[in-house]
Image (cartoon, rainbow, N blue to C red; front, top):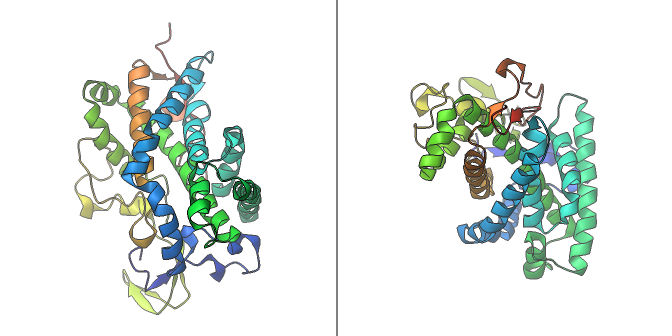
Length: 342
């Protein structure tokens, strides 16, 4: 399904009135070729290995500042709110060229987008509010393009992309780059806390962080389901009849634990090596920021393992609470002692 753009459409307009604010600014995840192809080409240069390497020092500065801030807090620290959420919010603001003082606003809007515990309308309201906020940012960038991604696209392609398209692209990057990365940082940290040998091995051999990140991505699969697809024709998949227009939602978490990938896929094994996981999606709509996300995670886990070698959970594991109903899998909170308690 994910690898069949000829058989399935991602166009959100199929379920939302085309006159609405949401559907007038669809991001990459809700667009089909050739529109999707044209928009992705606008962003692709900003996600090359060269560009990602360029911002690596700034990402490390953000991580170090978050560690310093967490270390300054008294008592147990919530690694979700005080650390995991801080880093991607700052990085995505840096990437897009948005004011750093808007980080908290970015966090609030992104979290609300993926929360399905309330009414579905709440998620759409958050989406609309996010788009309105970004329109204001874009208006300022059109007057004075900054050094971030928005400014770069406006300088090079300003006459080729309208406000709706650029707002949709920015919104997709903002939500995709924040919530998923924040959840993954916290979930990876929990895996390290549950097996102190992981952090020790990473300290002794930093190259081992690569295998840890890949296995953590596969095992946790923070984005549990892919964007909905709409069948373009009648077909049969997995013994099920799919009719034209049917909505098909793929479980990425189930795919990442499929026995076809190897043995004991329900277990976490950082020595497993890279597998053909779909934590970043697959095919045409594979996450454009996958390599940026990997870089953030690797640097964050390395820094956390080295800075706080004695970090411990502040509550029993069974008391940890996970989100009750969200597209993005994650912890509600992760209270820890950064240093061994006296």
